[in-house]
Length: 139
Image (tube, rainbow, N blue to C red; front, side):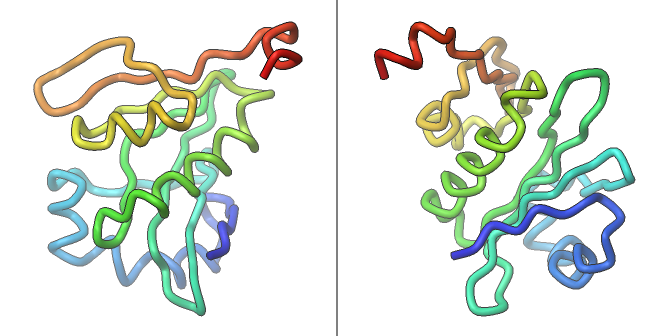
C-alpha cells in the first residue's frame, strides 16, 4: 500500500478520488456529508496497484490541520491506520491536528495519537496532543 499526498486542487487527486466521492455508498459512509476541497486542503490517499483504498482530506488553516471527513473502502482499519500514521507524521510538527471522527472509528484514531476532547451524538472531536521532548526520549 502507498500513501500519496496531494494538494487540494491537484489534477491527480480528481483521478484518484472523483469516481468515489460521487458514489452513493461512499457518501453514506460519510453520513451523507459531501466531500470538499480547495487549495487549502492536503489529501492523503491510500492506493494499492492503482486502486484507491481510502482518503483523508485535511484543511490547513491558521496553524490547524482539520479532518472533517474521510473514507476507507470496506471500513478497513489497517488502511485507516496507515492514513492516520502518515498524516500525523507529516503534519504534527507544523500544525495542531483536529478531527471530527465517527464514533465507530474512535479506537483507530486513539491508536494513532488522537484523544477525545468532546463527544457529540454521532461524532467525537479529537486532537493530537504534542509529545514533550523529554517524553519522546522515553518512548
